[in-house]
Every structure is written in structure tokens, then in C-alpha cells.
Length: 338
Ligand code: PEP
Ligand code: MN
Figure 1: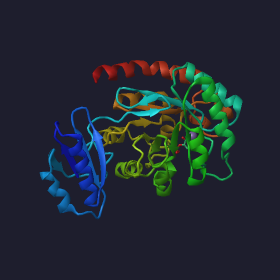
Figure 2: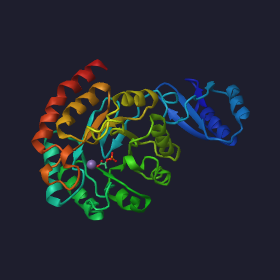
Figure 3: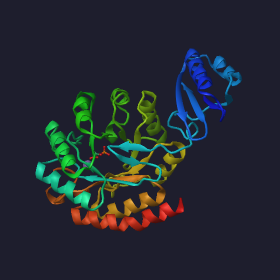
Figure 4: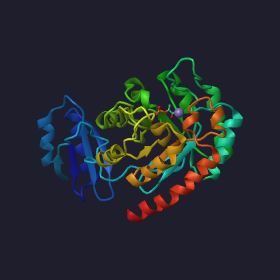
């Protein structure tokens, strides 16, 4: 239920409503907008008719039920776009972001060369996996803590905040110590124990869409993070499974637009995993800009032919710089049309 407070509602009236919502057996989530305060009453098993009686409480304008199964992420509850701060870099709203780097951290030299290159070409966040979810157990599994330390060194040198994947609750403390943005991989989107823990950490979360997940399931996964106390969530569309075997995945562009219509969180696109092919990454990135995504996360390797993971979809450094130049007109056009 959404409790819309009157424009002139006092702090005392807001606090009273929050108390009453809790007494009725619901969680109260306060959203303070520029014009008015809105309070979301969410949860199950509360006393609904007692909640509805809050219509008569001082300072309350009206009560509106939230029709979607996801509540706190919904644009019904919050109409302003959420802006997430990642180590000083704002994502969402007017701020377009490029996160770039290798699929996996392989060595100090490889990561530092990539970090310098992507920074010089205009990226503002460095990506790199230290814990890698690989389809085959015989493939490179990542450097673990050693990889996190290399990422931290690259951040220190370049000033770029880092995004890296947390694969399970057992790695969470190590990743929190080093990462500016915690990546939940596509395979883990519905790992609820992991989401519950991430709801309590003081770091923003990049939540990738599961390869076979519906938009509703994706937004409900984000709801776990918000309802557990972490409002700083960025969604990432990285391609879904369809019947076509030519591409690694199918980029669900309309799904990006729909996610932005239904939910106030920033939504970025991963054109690398969505296509699986280097040659298609710049076109998919331009399409992401045009459909209204808030940014991209893209794989870049100084020598893709030697990459230990995802070489075929990784741009080299000149290719990344060229893609960045090609994106500028599209970014300017979308900004002008806002
Ligand atoms: C990755 O970012 O390298 C990755 C493993 O992505 P996804 O979880 O989308 O497959
Ligand atoms: Mn990858």
C-alpha cells in the first residue's frame, strides 16, 4: 500500500504514520520526494483493514494499493529515478555510465594495461571478475582474493571504482572489502540467501538478469535487496536464452525499456554477453543508448586472442576507443531529447 502524505504534512505526522504502519504488522519504507513524502507499507500477514483506516490519519492525502507484485522497486511507489553512487560515480537519471574491463582478472599486467586503456578512452568504472562462474569446471575459475588485490591496485592507480562478481555468501566478506559495486551474475539472480546477505552490505549491487528469467522475476529479485535494506541497486540486461543458436544470447532491448517503465532503478546493458561476438558489441551498445539504458558494462582485453575467458566477445583497446567515439552522437541525441 502507498500512503501519500499531504504536501504540508509535518514530520510528526509522518512519524505517526510510520509507527502505525509497523503496529499494523507491515514494514514502512519512507520516500522523501522534492514535493511530498510517500510511505510504502509492505509485507504480508499484517492487519489490512487497520492499515486502510490510516486514510483518516492527520497529514495523509490518500492510500493507493500497489498492483504489481514488486513494491519497493516500482515506479508506482516512487516516480523519481533512483541515482546510485558507485565510488563517487553517479549512475541513473541524467548520468550515462560506461563500465569496462576484462571478463576475468588474469594478471597484474593484463588488468593494469586494460584499466589505463579504458580510462583514457572514457570509461568511468573498471570491471573484472576475480571469482568466475564458468560453465565447465575445467575452465579458468578466476584468481580469487589475488584478483581482488590486483583490482584494488588498478583503482588506486587510475581512480576508477571497481565492479566485480560475488559468486556466493562464502566470498561475500572478501568481495565487500575490495569492490565498489557488487556484481550478482546471471546464474545467481535467484540465489536468495546471497541476495538477503547483499541487502545488508554497505555497497551498491549490480543485479544481472538471469538467462531464462522473466522481467517480473528480475524485479522481484531486486525487491529482495530493497526490502532487506539496500536501496542501491542497478539492473543489468545481459541477454536471454531463445531458440537462436547464432548468438550467445538474445539482447532483450524492449525488456530494458519495460524494466525502466516498471521500476525506478537504473538499468544498464551488457552488450558483450548479450551477443557473444566482438563485431556486434558496438551496435548493441548504440542500441542500448537509444532504448534508454543508463549505461553499459563491456568486456575489453588488451589481447583478446589470449584471454582466459570470453575472448571472442572482448573488444581490444583500439576497438573499445572506437566504440566510445561512435557512442557519443547517440548519447548526445538521447540527452537532448530528454
Ligand atoms: C561476466 O560478467 O563475466 C559474467 C559471468 O556475466 P553473466 O553473469 O551475465 O554471465
Ligand atoms: Mn564474461
